[in-house]
Length: 258
Image (cartoon, rainbow, N blue to C red):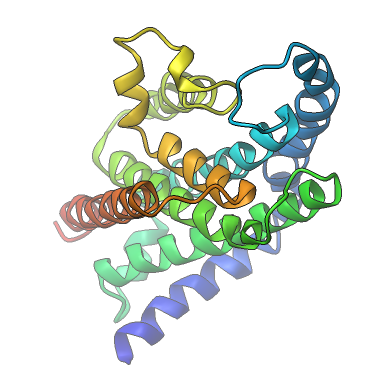
């Protein structure tokens, strides 16, 4: 119980800070995915649908919208576990102040990831409501898609927190977005099936958390849920989250308890 209270205290600390800067997150968390939904899912989607693409019986809007849930989760998690974590460890050193209280490093990381999960759930839920109003979902199971996106966001949040806590140079943060998240956004099945990738690249897409998140969200939104793939996606994302969290704790413990 004491550990839970200390973790919640870290979450409350993040929430109080967010009240002063929430406006700056509106574009990334809410407007960008909605703009993508309108421009690519609806407008471009009409052109794509005329060519009768093989999208598993889905319209292009129904194909893209669930994937954008997963990418929104990825981007939201990245915004919470890269620059803010580096600021807490190095630039502002607020994490040093946190662990000087009874809060332990493991509870600090748990609080960071819990807050990241809250941010992800809010962002993807708003987007899901807009997508549902636009006719992007055809199955009642779409109500579970935000939870699938949460798993995707937590996997990215844990891994990015571990990487940010490990690397020393600040230039790594820009590289993560430019050479990591952007290629994943484009080539993990968001806008076209990964089967269209070259044979040697396709297995790389399968190994990414975003592909698993996209496939899980798409299956729920369309109602095309198969037991084995669903279990594989969930287990993969949970394992990545757990490993990333453990590595983040280890890295931050080395920096905060020297």
